[in-house]
Every structure is written in structure tokens, then in C-alpha cells.
Length: 280
Image (cartoon, rainbow, N blue to C red; front, side, top):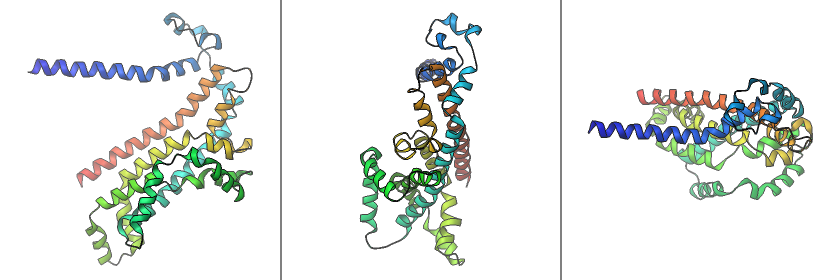
């Protein structure tokens, strides 16, 4: 029995490693290529990989300069921070209202919100752009940042996701706070919101991953160089002759690092919060 179990565990480990290699191979190749000279990037023989004469850091310097990656990173960080920060407040308030408050048409309105989950942004991108343009949310930096962020703060999936977690909370928590004189806002801010920290952290992770990779909407709104995001700067490298794959790979690595670091930090936060919740 133990021998069969050991073989089964070993097979699972081998299978897991094989799957990990398949998924990590493109990433490892891109990282290695970002440090290699242009002529050596597509040489796949193992001996050339360890040829230190073909390794260089110039791809990172050239890519940073050609893609104007510094300003683009600042724009992307500001865009994602505003969407995530504003979205947490807006979506949590809406979710709490759907979960705890009673008003006419609540269920119908929530059903309409849920239906929006299946609506892709690409379908409504054109009318959204004309609306943003008519509202003056294009052009200068401040207006463009508003155009990049405001349409994506309220999100149907986040409202649905947070509502389910608010519904799972015991109503007695808020009733006890109300007996101590807490109003609706205090019940929401001091009692309900801290109790759904794992859900909030999950929403943050999903929003960061989604909006860091946004391309279509920033391309439509960010018409000036000062409002271009990382993805737009990276895409420009494909159209600037000569096309240097080393620069492109280096910029892709630099554009990925902030997301990996943020995901790593938030992942630890989620685990810690879940452990605390379990202890309680």
C-alpha cells in the first residue's frame, strides 16, 4: 500500500515538474534572450546559451530609452493604483448595499449588474470612447488619466464577488455594532469591510493583473506621449525600425517585474489574512 502510494506521489511530482517546465519555458527563454546579443537570441543550441561573449546588458538600456519606459511605468502605476483604489471603495459600497440593504428594485438591479459580467470591453469600446471624448476625458495628462481610470472603477464581477462575501458574514456582527450606537457607515467601514479582507485582496490581485495588461483602451485614450502606458511603449518597439528583439524582450521583462512583485506581496497578504480568519 505504501509502495503504491509512493509511486503515485512520485508520478505526481514528475507530472507537476513537466507541466511547470512547459509553462515556464517561454518565460525563461525570454529572460535569457533579454541578456543576449541580437544575433544570439534565436540560437537554440545549448552550447551558445553558456557563451558569455554573447551576453550583454545593453538591451535593457536601449529598450528603456527607445520605449520611454520610465514615464510609461509611472503612467501605468498611476492608472492601476487609481482603478484598484477607487474600485475597492465603489465596488465594496455597491456590494454591501446589495447584500444588506432593502430597497425597491434591488434584485432586478443586481441581476442587471450580473449580466454585465459577460459583456467584453471591446464590444462597447467605441461608444465609451465617444462618451469619454465628449466629457473631455482625453488630451491633457489629467483628463487622460481620468479617462483611463474612471470607466473601470465600478466592475460587475467585483460587486458580485464582494456581495457573496458580505452575505456570508453573520448579521449579528452588525446588529451588535448597531446596539453600541454604530450607524450604517460605521457598520460597513469598521465591521463588515475588515471581515472580508481576503476577498478584497483577491479583487486587488485580479484588477492589477487585468489592468496592467490593458492595451486597447489606453491606445484609444492615451493619444499623447505623456499618457502612454507600458503596453503602448512596448508595442511601439515593434513599429520602430530596426526591430530589435533584445530590446523588446528586455522591456517585456522590465514590464513584468512590477506585477510579479505586487502579486508576490499580495499573495502573502491573502495567506496571512486567511490564517488569521481561520484562527478566529
